[in-house]
Length: 126
Image (cartoon, rainbow, N blue to C red):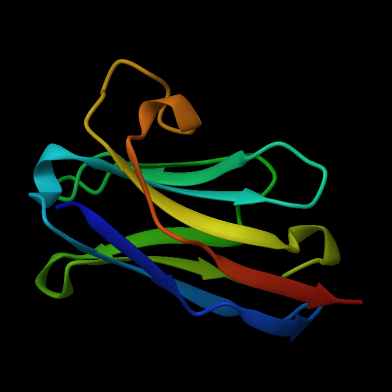
């Protein structure tokens, strides 16, 4: 059974940092892409960063987080991280990690993913 568990969210002041973790189990990492998404109240789910290969560590990030957020993978720990620096109030959202086998759909599209974690809340105060 594919399982994804996020952790690391919390309350932080603007300009601060957080590191989110996505612990995965039940599937071969190399068969799946892993993505980070977020959803703020009243807004659509947004793809913010994804890793397409844990061998080549190919990654993509949305323009809204480029230069501030970094996705990485620790294969030995079966965990994907999202390092978030210089956080802004508009980054406040519920953050999800997801896993998907499709390699035909855009990496930052939610439709490319079949399995989702329960989410971790990030709140950035001004």
